[in-house]
Image (cartoon, rainbow, N blue to C red; front, side, top):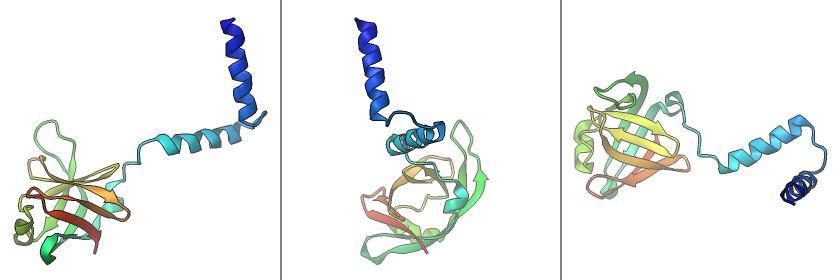
Length: 143
């Protein structure tokens, strides 16, 4: 009884998938399904490296350079990358401690020089947005 049910499900699935499929068509279909349900891809640091501008409320902004060179922290934290900015411009945004950055599948983390998180900015199209330590809305865009 259970075995009959199993083979009925297999047959129905086979018919739903269009009968006989070539192995490459089956792989394409599986990859399409996997792509819709899988997590966003982790971008390589070189894809995000370059000139950026972080914009805060009230017209505050600061130019940043996200560098792809690796910087390691003491302890177990994952490696990060160098970030260069005019700290005096970041301080009014509550970001005076930012020294490094790390990509993630859904955004960019801005870090202190010990590797701890200052702020996480979520990807929103081509920009990255979030709230600073003081609650201020921040937006990171290509310069």
